[in-house]
Length: 252
Length: 252
DNA sequence: TCAAAAGTGTTCTACGTACACCCATGG
DNA sequence: CCATGGGTGTACGTAGAACACTTTTGA
Image 1 (tube, chains in turn purple, blue, brown, green):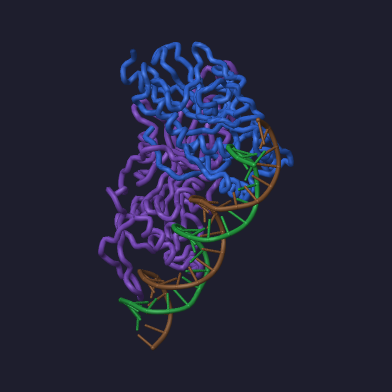
Image 2 (tube, chains in turn blue, yellow, purple, red):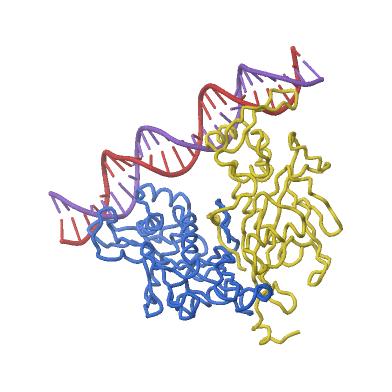
């Protein structure tokens, strides 16, 4: 252990951690909840198990140190790929946490938190190992550091950005039906919106356009397929400016 | 100079920088009489002059290093007090910047940016020295590092949070008229809103309540005074949770 | 022919805007 | 008395919510 004056001289460690959200079918039995009819999707989060103290054996958000040769965004992507093999479709800086109390041991730690979305078609890579496990949002384990707080903030941000479509759409692939989009939208926000009104709002917003194709998947009229308008804001996109919204700040 | 592998081992420096906004009369003297603020107002920003390279002699946002014993928020407040003598009424984390290219010299630098609001009654401390100077937003000098970007992002955030009242109100003191509030609101957003409608919206929102008092300051009907509803969210408040809004992210 | 989801039409209401108008005051 | 801003009343337009209704399919 170092004494206080020695500690004060030490540079803080800078790390990046990311809360990754993906949609998966409801946990447990299908249970055909009449209110959640359709597919029934739910937000899941991948966590990694720490192998070293502090918080050894506890679950934590995937992340890693900031290295000299990478920007913050690059460091977040690299850490994700290294620790989980995932390459999220959407990645955005969330908040930086650096409270004094969060540093266990001698080294002061500052964590730059990110949040990310995984496309519903990116589920193939969802391997689970001894040290990488997926949890539904409603049943998270105890988390290391203040990572539970980070997840809570990330959910707030996700919901705030999921107005009608926008972010919700990033869970989906290039082509989708309006019902797909509505289901994602509703799952993220935890609501059930009117299909008719959702359709009108979305089409009026001009965010999507019909591909001309259709999909038949049941004993009912086929649903038209849509894609995003504009230059395909889909894979590997690079955000342009930090979000700008309407809340208050957290003591870091 | 160090070589690449030596650099890669170095821990990044963590600093906090803050874009401080205050309202001042368009061009006149400070003379900001808190009891009588009925003039054109404009956003001003205090900048400090760097004394050491990199960017020696260039203007920069006030800030300082993150020390071991302070949280991020505390570090931001402390740096502000030390470099400008100011204690803003509102302080909120904005974004963290850590692009590789922004580090001049051998040391990688990560800056956690904050934005702050100064009450219109806090103008007394607005001393100007050789190394501390106020600039109107429309006439900023060349800035060190990427601080111009930080200010741009901070303005976006300020405007996004200034819907009707809320943040705009923090520029004012405990007691104010609705015209005061509207003037601040309009100055920040750069619009001119209808007094009648502004009044209705604000009162309907329940954010303010009349004090019972009034202020007479001209050849017209006296204006009622208002205060904020609830447990006075005024001086030295501690935010609770990072904002949650609706934009995209910036490459750090 | 029936159930189920896709898709359309219509009404109701909330809320913001525009703007006419009255109120109180200093000069 | 009048000019000036404080403050009220009211009509209009837009957008979302609620919900009835038609369409197209598989079984």
